[in-house]
Structures are given as C-alpha cells and as structure tokens.
Image (tube, rainbow, N blue to C red; front, side):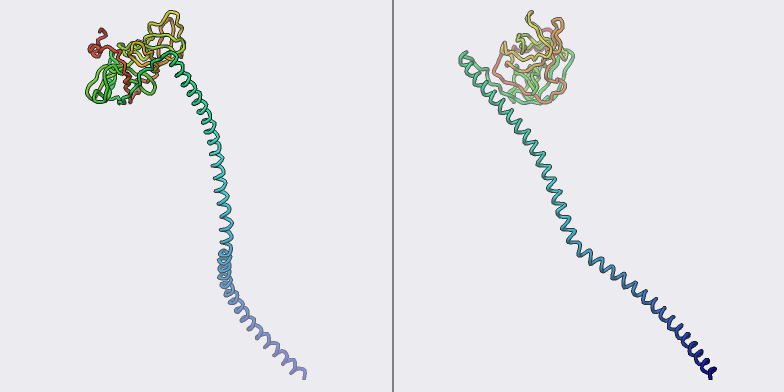
Length: 294
C-alpha cells in the first residue's frame, strides 16, 4: 500500500512544480508589464507635479523679486540725491561768492559815482557795436589787414576800432558799401596810444609786421615788468580807453615787446566799435599798397 501512496505524492509534487513554474513565468511577465506601465505613469506624474510646483512657486518668486528691484531703485535714487546734494552745496558756495563780489562791485560803483561827482567828471561816450565776420585775410609782407563782410550799409566807417572778445584787433581803414578793411595792430603803419596798468606809464604801441609789436616812447624812469597788462589810454581821441591790448613778454635793454591778447591767426568774428571819437586822420592810400612812406 505504501507504493501507491508514494507514487501519488510524487505525482502531486510534480504537478505542483509545473504549475508553480507556469504561474511564476506569468507573474514575472505581469510584473514586467506593470513596471513598464508604472514607469510611464510616473514620468507623466512627475512632469505634472513639476509644472504644478512651478505654478505654485511662481507668485512667491515674483513677490520676492519685486522688493529686490525696488531696493535697487531706492539705492540708485539715494546715490543720485547724494550727488545732487554735493552739487547744490557747491552751487550755494559759488552763489555766496558771487553775491559777495556783486556787493563789492555795487559798493565800488557807488563810491566811484560819488568821486566822479566831486571831480565833476565827464564820462566817456557810450560804445556801440557792429558785429562782422572776417571773409578774407589778405596780409602781405608790408601790410597786415583783414576784410570784413560789413560796410557802410551796416554803419561801419573809417577810424572805428575793431575788437574781439579777447581784446583789441585793429582799426577800420577802408570802407565799402558791403565790406571793410581793418588794419591790424601788428602792422607797421599801426600806432596806438596805450598805458601800462601797473606803472602806470603812457606809451605808443608800434607795429612792425611781427607778431609781437614794440612798446615805444616810454619814459626813461619807467620800469615795465614782464607779464604787465597793456590797455588803450584813450589819448588823442583815437581809441576808447581801457581796451585790453596785450601783455609784456620781454623788456630787455629798453626793447619792450607785447604779446597781443588776440590770436591774429584765429579770428572769425569781429566787433566794430562806434565810440563817437574822431581822433583818426584819413589813411594814406599808399599804405595799403605796401608803401611804408606816407
């Protein structure tokens, strides 16, 4: 009886093993399919979670970024205010200085008026200006002159003084209807009554066709220093007084040379001065032709 039982047990064990193998294979295949499906499902889920998280955090990031931009704007404005405050301080100081000098000028003007009344002083005639442009510079060996685009039609006449913003340039010697010619102070025919500011001493500024005219007819006891300013004296009624002419650049052995304030090589616009003075004699036409003799 034991043999039939053993055979049946063995048969059952064999059947169980075969069944187990089949189900195991199916389970493994199902697990593999499940993992594949779950992998795809997880990727989509992760993507959805990521998008949802970004959407949720975006307002927070925006709120955090706005204070940063606001702080940057505030810092920039503070820096600008600091610069403006410094500039305002400088401008206030400069304004205070200008007010001081204005008060000094008004005080001196009042004092000057009182002194003029005491001396019965007759003021110089008022100056009128005619603006003109240099259109030609026909300087030759013996004549240094310039041609202006204004003539008698603009009120220019012979004997008027030509100046720039730097000082004296020369005087008008020939006038046409729409043009005029000025003789430069460096020309050999130019003789201008001047006065030294520091000495003060009268003299004649004599042109010699060089860039630095000579100061002549100084008093023997006069000591002219280098750097001293020279202005027109107004004597003889030819030039208004006080027009800046130049400064002394050399004073060796009585040969005093002046450097004009006006750069003759760089003149574009000129102001012709009408002062009401009439101290000029008519210019000899031979002067403009290069003849050095009157």
